[in-house]
Image (cartoon, rainbow, N blue to C red; front, top):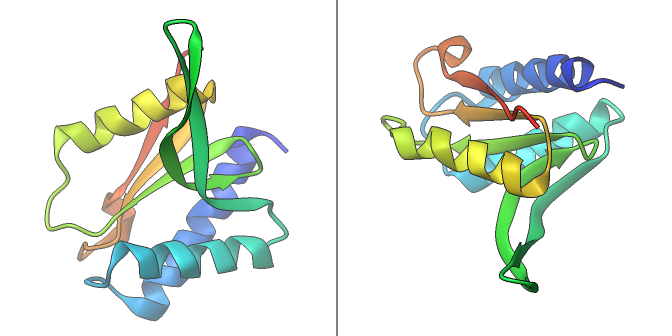
Length: 125
């Protein structure tokens, strides 16, 4: 399955969770319910996936955690905030680069319109 095919199924699950729960809950709630929906679609899902960092000739383990990793191809960074900051977008791009992955989705569930709160980020490997 390609990153784009995985992304399509992820978006479907995001809409399902949002339509059932609405905005305003903690990120952990959206992470758990979204992981459940993704698994129902038959996708491989890892939550809070630790990622080591190779720095200055040594491995630092773990340096950061991916909210949700789908099919070992797509990173989901989940937020539930009144407004995303530029640093949230940069954070996902950095995670993609350090994990050597191509595609990520930044999702802010605290939104009146979830379709306007899903941001696709691409790491040009």
